[in-house]
Amino acid sequence: MNTVFLREIELFGFKVSLAIRRGVGRIHRTRNRNEKVVKDYKLGNSIREIADKYGVTVGRISQILVEEGARSPRWSRMTSRQRKLIYKLDRKGLSKSEIGRQVGVSRTRVRQILQDGTFQQGDLTGE
Image (cartoon, rainbow, N blue to C red; front, side, top):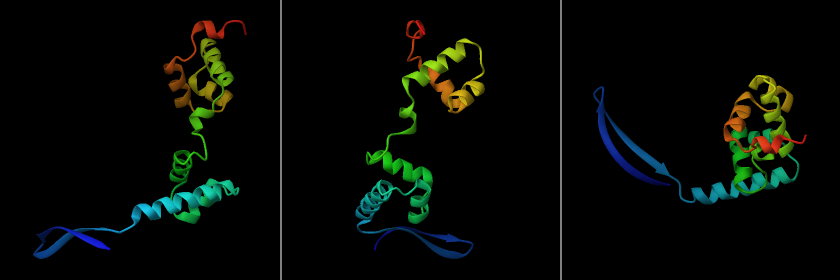
């Protein structure tokens, strides 16, 4: 490992050296791990199993899978029909929490979709 010396300070009468250690090939190991994560996912392992195997969070595994193109982000999986339903339920006066329960998304996601304004009034007519 390469060590990059930063500085030496005195703390409570003791000299303390502060340094950063950077491993050679860290990027290569990360790429290698990411390839293994994708392979495990394609073999049918759950994201939780993969996270436990590699000692990282479920969120990080999900992020790796999206970055590597093995999985689409959750937010992009919402269908046009679901978005239209969110707008229709909002027009009926339901709360964002109730809309979220009916559609299967969080209240926050409902708010984001409504603020986005993807569908206009004309898109909802005729149904």
